[in-house]
Length: 467
Image 1 (cartoon, rainbow, N blue to C red):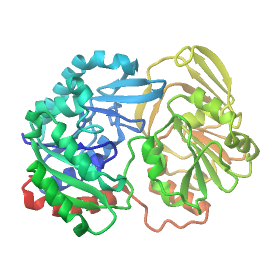
Image 2 (image 1 turned 45 degrees about the vertical axis):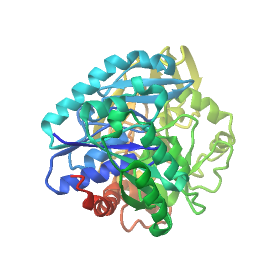
Image 3 (image 1 turned 90 degrees about the vertical axis):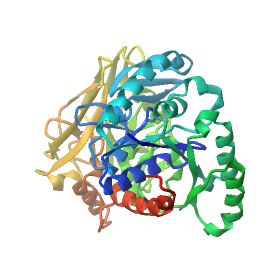
Image 4 (image 1 turned 180 degrees about the vertical axis):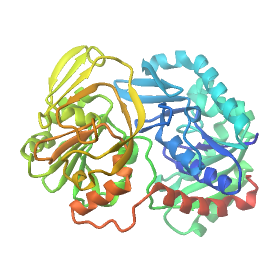
């Protein structure tokens, strides 16, 4: 079956969105299409229906293709924990923590996993749209570069290299990437795409002609800088969130923040808050997930935000999601899973105790009914909400809010839950807007964004016979 590969001249060049757009285009044309990223490094993940964990980008791309996310679409996921250590997730299951220096020892075995996953998808779908990782021309690791070099040689796809002009140096980065690729892979390059142009396209014409002459490869299209809601892959993307001076919701930027895609649909009314900043102006404060709850709890306690959080009880709505939920409780007990045996006091705002007793994580999609007295959610009592759980640790709660899960304070102004994706629910988004006096007339969605992008991409690539 044919395949298309989107490689980047740099990280965050727009590979994920371009892959999603191509998936949507092909699906609209009647093809069965699936996304694929052999190896991803991301703290933003998603849980499939069968309980497997993959990067959020591949889930988003699957939805763009009109199919359910599948662990085969991202067989290897690395979730950074700090100190050059990442959690290794293989075919949806957390296997172990691994140091960066030792990771490449796993390369040959992981290649087998990747190959099996890709070939399995290839048997089922008309097209596979492959996403590379980082910059495609990482010449220092060509012998062990699974998502770029290995995949190109395995799939023999048409390769599109995308560069981000908004960061500058796009012609040099595209030219350099192309010229540094191994000869056999360079021959697979079908063309370049210039992404995130804020000005007029004609100003690039002379540069485009020169690049095409030097490489003998066409520039397939120039994509404009688009304001839209797309799931972010890593914390680098936080800087792309515009500073919202009028935001009523402050999301605490923990040092090891994870799954901050939970809040992307709140962008119009929320912003990130650094630990040294103040939370005084916000009506709602959210503690997000963390890849190391205990370490981030200590950092938060020793910060300005932590001091103000304690003084905000009863005056603001304080919400904890996953790791943030654990921090708001009375105590966290680690039985040697993360840091050796430790008992750590939480903020004590919720009557909960969290215990880390095993390495294995809970990963599942869930649908629950709102039952508790939690501010914002209380007007939704009896309604369903959807989401997914990804966490180590089990939390004992005295006052659950989503059937038997989560917890709220007695007055309901402080609450927490393990439910990632809670703020993707239309009813929760509208209730949140209503609480702060902001009418959400049209619920933002990733689907609307990818429809718009796919239309632009289709016009750019149509003339070159990519499909």
